[in-house]
Amino acid sequence: MQICRVVGTVVSTNKAEKLSGMKLLLVRPIALETFAEESSMLVSVDTVGAGVGEVVMVVSGSSSRQTCLTEDKPVDNAIVGIIDHIDVESKRIFDRRGSSL
Image (tube, rainbow, N blue to C red; front, side, top):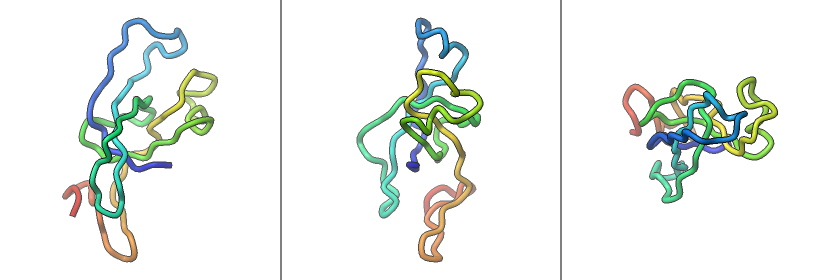
């Protein structure tokens, strides 16, 4: 799993039939040591109702096809959770209510 921030949306009118109705979001991985966003962005299928600005858990490869919404679909990246908070070595480095600390 990766921790990412949702940074945008993707709209695709013409796509594989199995992707019809799926919400596509742009996510950017986060370096947990600094909580800085990394430069690369990924297109990810939203399975949990995430929105722009939220910090999310993302899975890729075969793991991304293990949700009820993505099973047997041509998906290589999926958002599987919205992060409430992250603690590292007893220190809170992220809290959804107050963003990164």
